[in-house]
Length: 385
Image (tube, rainbow, N blue to C red; front, side, top):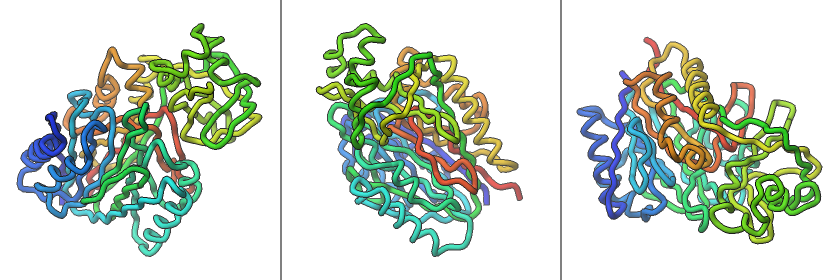
């Protein structure tokens, strides 16, 4: 049975109407085919319950998962204050898991996914969305087995309030993880890259605690950045600089290459609020992005995904882009999608959103990796007969 997909998007005053219109559009484009999976990307400005009411009123018991984002993405570019719905139809099976305790323990959440999937012997992939402000994604990744293909992203929203949510079926909330386990006649190819490069400035991480990076070279983190960029340290604790700090992440050399770690915001005491733990005593490089390097990264990620897809025909691309890309490419909204489309071809529908981190499994022998600042291209394909 062929894999068929469709995408719909809508903007409305309330979430129910936007969800209803986007789903109606996607169903019309799917024709007589029955959807086997629905992916929903919703503006954080909507009430999630209203969005779900609108979407599920047309999809009945179709497996559904989704997340909040500052803007949805399609081949037509960015869609702020909107709902975007992607439908996938074909000869595959989907089971869903709602794990509300992700923010309390990434390790326990990983153990539950491991327990659920280890009961099956056939090939399976896990697509998930989790809270981007709360919870330890790195701990979650380390708790997963190496043989499981896990891909997904961390939901984003209002950086000031930390407002974000996840959706699954008729359930929604913050601090949780929604997962879909896919089995059967569907291929998945995944690629990831980032458009940030070292600029020569190096720091020693001298004090950190949990998700807070307190000092660089013995000074409050904001003072270290103030000396580089010329803005007073106190200004980094207020918008817009408190959020623009994500444009300037830190790169740390590890055994398997450079790891990128990005601030979510700068706190009043000058510390950086991260969503991954960084260790004291590590040397970190300042990284800076550009339009050209982001376009190259988007194309590279799409090429990786196609390569991993093998002989399968691409039918839908789910693109999860770090929120830093939205900030950096503000004058060129959606340009990363154009780069992805250039590689995949104009016939492949694209859906996506902005996230606070991305997760993918590099190969069958590796554990899933938690990424900051990347673009993750997930391509669903129709296997060759």
